[in-house]
Length: 563
Ligand code: HEM
Image (cartoon, rainbow, N blue to C red; front, top):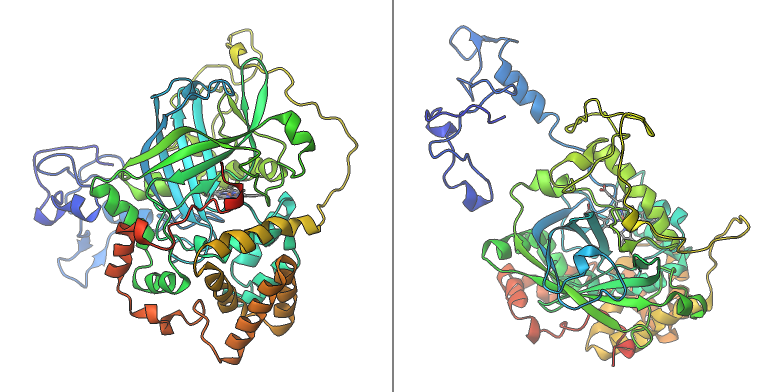
């Protein structure tokens, strides 16, 4: 819309704001300011005024005032549907760099040369809250990486918990509903939340993370993330290995306690976006090292843990971490809406050398993302600058709203005697997996083994971190005390299945909070001694990660660490 350009400035107040960059806005590129135009590029004479009959405030406006019509009509269409989940987010640009050779397990071109850098955009998010919600709340964090490789866009969509609450895709709508607002009251509802998890106890391992201080990171730079799902590294000879990715922060893991998180949520609901934006504006370059857990398919077949069960992690002793890259962020987006809000990620954005696996959650995800993005952004969302690959060509996918890239007379059917298309034979794969079986209705069942990793997390990991077991109990109690008695009782039994002492401690702390004899931090955080902490103190915490008792390795199962 800034088509017309002139040395004339359209009134002092309407010229480019020279200070714009300081408050995060961009300004006109011409030294004296661009001429503002109507949508068709014609100069506007009177930007903030309107055409009237009679030169006075009470005069009648005219429908022919195109500038006024367009301004208001554009404004009323400014909002688009927010993401169903992960609505609250921020983003940054940077790159992925290969640090160690991994070409023995993948033919992915961008991973073939140590030192090679691939441009990257990341969107960080919380999961359950709406677009304007406070960022430091207890939640999983989403890390969505978009890498512009020469072979197309590769998206890595990871989470700050190493496990997911479900292992059957059909359960995702219930999980999402139960962790959002009550459909009648429009309010968060802790009875609904715990009732759902009481009836879906395969989530117990996830809940152990969600109610530890790991679910209140001080910002995105101080958190790790995990692929959770198993993917495949493939080679051009048709061979493959399964792989899980771990992305570990070089800033040190730093978490808020529940009370600190609650204080910051009140004082600065945008704290995590601000922290990232300020760091990048100040020239900092936050980075993460990237590791692969390589899984030989033959070993996966009879390994006691199902590698496609997203509620489980794989021990490092059997599947050691292998470093192969790092992610560095170095630049803020130029426009939050155009880049962060309009970005569209999907695990189906894959490139040769990286492939999906039979993991049922991953398979379900492969239909969800582009589908919701057609609704959220329109059918041609892939043509938006933040989403479009360096090169793409498919004359069979034509037309639709907001088509930028017309292909003229190129046949829109295939095959055609009027056109020849190349086929990427170099990327063709022979059958990689052989599937044969009877169609069955399957729903995974809860078994005692589902509690084993949650137990290790409680008995070994949290036990080895001073104060973390107490925080966990108080975090659950603060939340659970708002649920009705009938639901609380079942939740006590669920945690008792993890560990008898844990169940007892949660029951005691929760019932005390219900009776009002103690103030559990997550519920009554403002009365906690930390409530007087100022934001400056919390920011200081970020500056000194190594002095913090919470500076532990997030990949928590220390018993499984790479020796
Ligand atoms: C059946 C399981 C799942 C379904 C159906 C699902 C669906 C969705 C949907 C609909 C969105 C919003 C996308 C948009 O509006 O652009 C989303 C966002 C996201 N999902 Fe999932 N999801 C699932 C599991 C997972 C898992 C296991 C992970 C990571 C391991 C994950 C990571 C993310 C991330 C990082 C985002 C934010 C993307 C962004 O910043 O734009 N999801 N998911």
